Length: 121
Picture 1 (spheres, helix red, strand yellow):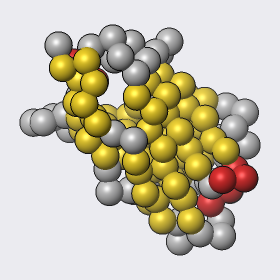
Picture 2 (cartoon, one colour; picture 1 turned 120 degrees about the vertical axis):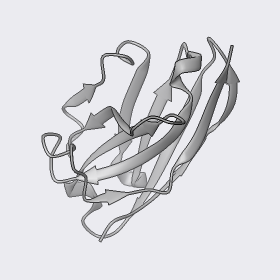
Picture 3 (cartoon, helix red, strand yellow; picture 1 turned 135 degrees about the horizontal axis):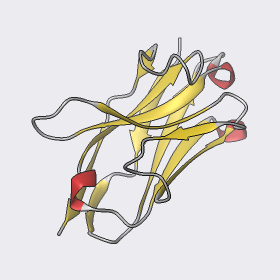
């Protein structure tokens, strides 16, 4: 079992930055790929970014490439999402997720509760 708790959401103006964190617990945390998803009001949840268990491979949605960076700090059981140059369309609830591999991140095994990100224009 892996438990995920997100933090770091909030309200920011367009062009600003936020850093989300996901604290993971569970003995097998370090063997999972980790990811971030988001869901805007009235829309389906969508993939944002993922990182392999080793941290050596990352994947991003086209809409966030060059603006967002995913990283993991294994010693602290934490996955972070640094979000720069935020746009109003980045608004939504951001969820942390864990899956066996990046390839299986389409159907994660574990989800966090989510943290709200609001970008004002």
